[in-house]
Structure formats: structure tokens, C-alpha cells
Length: 458
Image (cartoon, rainbow, N blue to C red; front, side, top):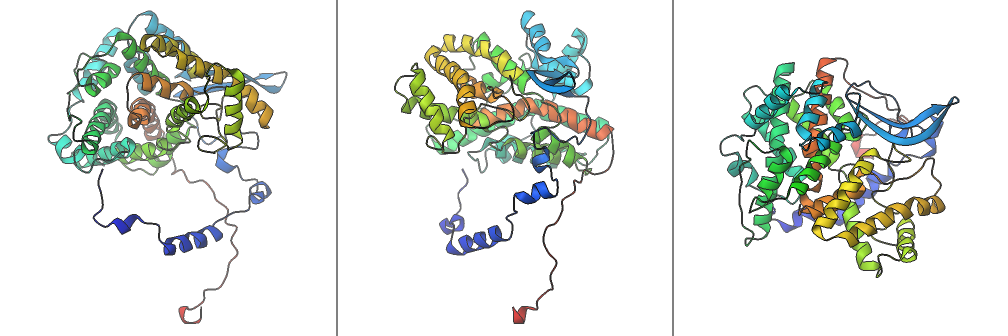
């Protein structure tokens, strides 16, 4: 990790603390004013329903249905281009093949590919897996950082400098740029991690494996990451499934909305995707799976009997009462902004997670996850007033899966990005095709107007 030669540079000085107090005193808004002016804080109404800000054909989320004129919670459903994700997964699992490339094609172009189209698309992605000459040496190996999301964003912005037409926002050129980023994300993240790990520990061998054209995206991730290039069929299948389930999630999630907002300004594709990466990095969005893993590690150290429902339940209550783990009052991986009864992605993932835990000899840990998944909704219902049901979300299991796959925690969120770049690209193209006004939401000022006071009499 890059270090400053001036150790005082990063210290929080008394002057900074005073300025922080000044900033806080003049920027804190009375929460009651949001209700007074009918402001949809976070673009959500009082019931947690998202404010309609756009239209999309890319994906759809179903969490409630109309029954006798009333909105009633239902089991969650997720659709890619109108096709239920459960059906997409069933299709490629039944045929014993990988599904991420097919899913990416569907998201970008709106139709399931024929065998010939899919083969051609895989060849096209393989063509774009070549990084610019000396990119690894000049960009990735210099100033490595522990945060691979920042490494990804930096690499994406640097690709701009290697592009002969970086500012060309015509649809064919933006599509070409998107395909390149979809193809390159695994290398950028994995190579970034290898450089960081070697920088932190010189005994860690620094190795770079070029991707193989005949391998799927999921296979190449494992192939490039492991020094011996080896992985099991189940490992590759589950990572591929994770990529499919993370590829897209409606236009209203924070990073996809960011994609639309930034793209609407007319900027280049690299800047759009870098902004989306910044959004996904946040612990309230893509970084949640790391928090789930850390929470469970603390739970395993704190609870001496993982099968004792009473002891596990007491730990969960302590979490909610800000007495355990990071004292945030949250049970990470439980609940979702949209889903209530169930997250379909978690439902699909669950049985495959069980199979992987058996292969890895981690069934005891899996049983603990299952127990928490069962107990948490009931305990949250007892301890908190909620406007809708609570269930496990995709982050609840994904961190555990990545851990079982041997992925370092630094790559948990980047794997999410390797998948979501497919959805971001689809939203970027959709914004390009439906060219409209720049997205500019309204903010109401609540500050009173006052006179300027000359410096010498302040």
C-alpha cells in the first residue's frame, strides 16, 4: 500500500476537529423538516417504497401484489428482461453449463442468445481480455492499495488514457467500451489483489496468470487467482451462479441509479462505471457481504455452542441492542430495501451453499447460518417495529460462499462488481439510447438569507 513520507499528513489534528464541529453545526438538518416539506428522504416514501424516477426494460423486482385493492407482501421475484431468474438458473443448471455469459447477453441485448450467438459472444469477450501493453507493470503494480474497489476504479479511469476514442459516446463505441470492461474486470481485480498481497508480504509469491479463452468467466477468476490454477467443478458452478444472481437488480439500486445519473450528463463510459464502482463499494450496498462474514466470525468466537438456539438468539439480541460486534444495531444480511418475505436470490443460492459446505467440510458453519436465518426474523420482529417482513438477502450467504472458495475478503465486493458490470453496462446503454435531459433532482434550501459581512468587521 502506498505510504506518505509525512506521517503527520494523515493525523486528525485539533484544528480538523474544530472545523468538523463547525461543519456539523451548520449542516445538520432537523429530521422533522423532511415530513414538513414532504421530502422523500433517500427517494423512498414513509412506507419504504421507492419513488418512481425512471423507466427501464432491463430488470424487474416483485415484492408485493395487489389483492382486493391492497398491496400485500409476496415471495420475492426477480426478472431479467422479463424472464424469471429462477427459470434462467434452472435452464443452464439443467443443461450443466455456465450461465453468466448468457445472462450478460440477455441483459445487454434483450434476448436470450441462440447457440451460435452465445458462442460468438464468448469469443468476443475473450478477444477483449487483453490488457494494454505494460498496463500491469505501469498501473496495477504501482502504488497497490488494500481496497480492490479503489484499484478497480483507478484501473477503469486509466483505461480511458489508453483508448483512442475515449470521449466518443456514440452507441457502437460505448458498447465496445462496455464489452471491454466486462471482459477485463476479473483481471483488473485479481491482478490488483496479487500486487497488494505481495506488497504487504514479500514472502507472498507474485504471480500473474493470463486468462484462458476456452474458460468461462467464473473458471477464469479461479484459474487466475490460484497459484496452481486448480478448482473443482462445483466451485466454478457456484461462482458462476453468484455472478448470475449479482448481475442486475432493477434500475433503482444505488449503483445502477448512479449509472443513469452520471451517464445523463453525457460523460464518457469509463467515468460512468467508475462512479458506479464508488457506489457499490459502500457497506450499505456491495460491501455488506464482508460485514456478514465479520459478524459471523465474531459470533463464532462469542457463542460457545453454535447449535444452542437460546445462546445464538441472545447474541442476535445483543446485535440489535448495539451490544455486540460493531455495535451498529444491525444483523447484517437480514432484510432488504425492497423484499420482505424472501429474496429470490438467497432462495436460489441456499441449496448450492449447502452442497459447497459439504465439499469443504464446513457443515457446522452452514448449520449456524441456517439457524441465524431462521431465528433473526422472529427476534427482529420482537425487538423492532418494522413496516414489512424481514428475510435473508443475497449478502447473507455470498460472503460465506466466497470464503469457502478461498477468495480473500479484499475480493468479496470486487466479485460483486465483476457481475454487476453487466447490469451497469445495460443501464448505461439504455440511458444512451433514450437520450433525455440531465438527471437533476430538486433540493429545497432551508437556510435563511442573510447579508454579507466584510472581513474587517467580522
